[in-house]
Image (cartoon, rainbow, N blue to C red; front, side, top):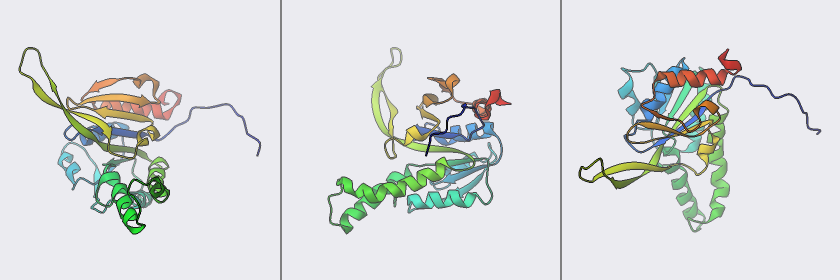
Length: 234
């Protein structure tokens, strides 16, 4: 088939945003803040035993609590069901459960290794697991609404000094707990530290390149929403 060449045009789009940070950094609150700025009905798919409900007095949203096992197909199915009554923004909190939680990809890999009497590190196991993960990922990327997914980050404590005070331990987040590379699927990928700084490490929104925002507010979501509309937000 011949390649069709035409003038590129900027058009409206739906947000795909990933937030990664250690426990206590404020991922859920930040996701809700940005979602509120985007506007419309918000649905949180909660794998954290309903923890997002703690913010129900500050944000208007619906919640669906998902329990183990966290098979990736269960998230794909949930996103498919939402198409019947589509919200404007879906928050997945958190994607890490579908990777490292009970019933997630890593546990499925162990089960397959036992079933087929293979070494758990055998790369051939991913021939069965990759389509499972990709179906979930495709459901997020092709959803007809904005999708924000939170990911826990591997934690490490480092010693730091503040002025002339005694050394203190500080918790930092490292790589997100998810299949490597999932952050590249996002339009905007952010890391959140324990001082609640939102560090934008990858973005297709030029004006947010390398931005560091302390305790993001609703205005950030409004700003992103305007960019998504294209044509200067008109």
